[in-house]
Image (cartoon, rainbow, N blue to C red; front, side, top):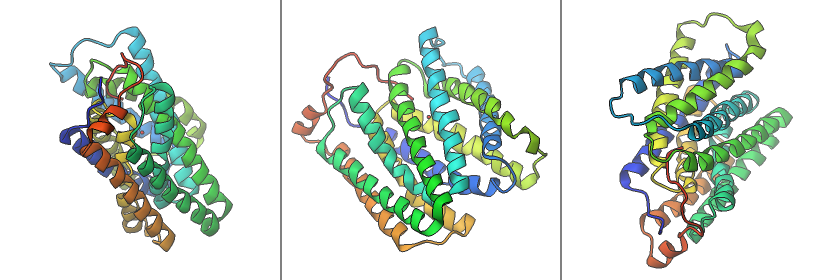
Length: 318
C-alpha cells in the first residue's frame, strides 16, 4: 500500500497541538520557582487523567475497549511519552532555559525518523530527510550556544532534553502500531492513566517539599493539564493516526518558533543571534518536510511505500 499524505485536518490538528505545547516550557519555568519538576508532572497529568476519564465515560461512541495486548502497549506508550519524557523535560528546563528547550525539540524528528526506519521499515522521501537533518542542525547550533553562554548546568540541561527526545521517538513509533481501531480520546485516556501513575510514584521523591500552591500556581497547573495535556494530546493523537510519525514530529518543529517567543514574553529571557539563526534553520527544515508531504510526486509516493505490509496505522503522546 502506498503511504498517503496527511489531510489538512490532520495537519491542522498537529499544528494546533504545537501551538498549545509551545507555551508549556515557559509556564513550566515559572512553576519551577514554587514546585519541583516531578511534582509539576504529577499534578498536571493526574488532573488530565481525571478529566479524560470523565470524557470517556460520557462518550457514547467510544467503541470497544482495547484488548489486553493493546492496553499493555498503550500503557508503555504513556510511561515513555508522559512519565519518562516529561521527567526529562521538566528537569532539563530547570537546568537550562525555556527557549533552549523549545528549540531542542527540533532534534526529535531525526530520532523518530531513524526509529521509524528501524521498526516500521518505511522508506523516507529525500526532502523529508533533508528537512529533518536541517532542523537538527539548527538545534545543534542552539545547544552549542547554550553551553557557551550558560555554562555546565545549562549544557547538562540541554543534554537531558535531548535524551527526552529518545523517549518521545519511542512513544510515537510504538503508539503508531499499538492503537489501531480506537479513537484519539480512548488512546489518550489509557496513555495518560499510565503516565500519571508513573509520575505519582516518582513524585514521592519530592514529598518533603510539598506545600499548598497559591492561586497563580494552581491556575498555571490547570492550564498545563487542560490545554497542554488534554487538548494537546487529543489533537496530536488525532493527527498522528493519519500520518507517518516522522511527519507529525517534524510539524512539531513549529513549537520552537512560538516557544522562544513565549519564553521571551513570559520569562523575560534574552533573544540571541544564535537562537534567531537556529530558529530560521529549523523553520526551513519544517518547510521542506511539509512541501514533500503536501505536493508528492508519483515517484516520491512510490518511494514512500512500506517495505512490509500489515503495519497497523493508529493514533499514538508529552
